[in-house]
Length: 93
Image (cartoon, rainbow, N blue to C red; front, side):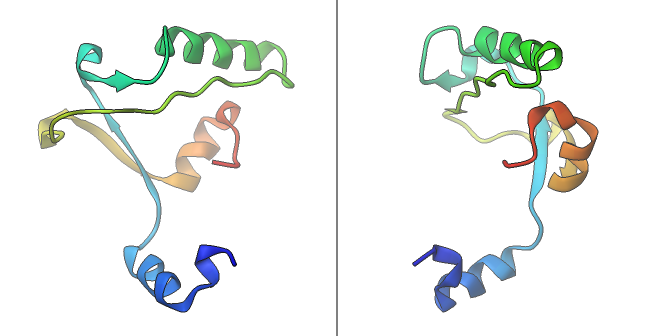
């Protein structure tokens, strides 16, 4: 059964509100990622997607070992508005 169909989880998800994308300005040396050259592959694959609509986008997850300070937050945008603006990223995220 999908999680959103479980009543206790659905209620918690509904209380969270709407999804947003939080853009932050960080020192890239502080990010911990899972793979070699994560940013290069990500950026190159986004460019590749611009010139070849069927190209695969390499995305990488990462994490910080500290909290993000309010002064590091660049913008907070509703998810749908963010992906409408940057449509090359795909809408399935």
